[in-house]
Length: 108
Image (tube, rainbow, N blue to C red; front, side):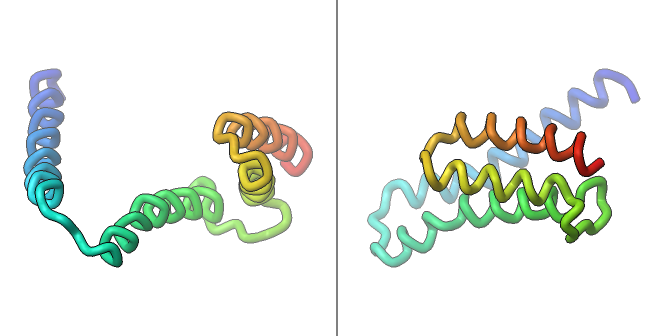
């Protein structure tokens, strides 16, 4: 593939992304949404993040691994507990990385 082709694909994806996301945001930002709908929409980012994280934790390298020997699973639990207790994203991230590396070395 040539560099021109790659840049054309990137530009096309950027335009498609803009055209799919901007109109709804422009319209919704100008109207007053009911409280129940605003509350419901507030859960969308969390739901997307959970879906992405669970997929990576439960299926490392594309293989289901729901066992006690899964360092991804243990590190995610530890990260969640640290975030729940201290409400620090940076602290939880560092604790998660450190615990994952320690568990990976221990569990294999």
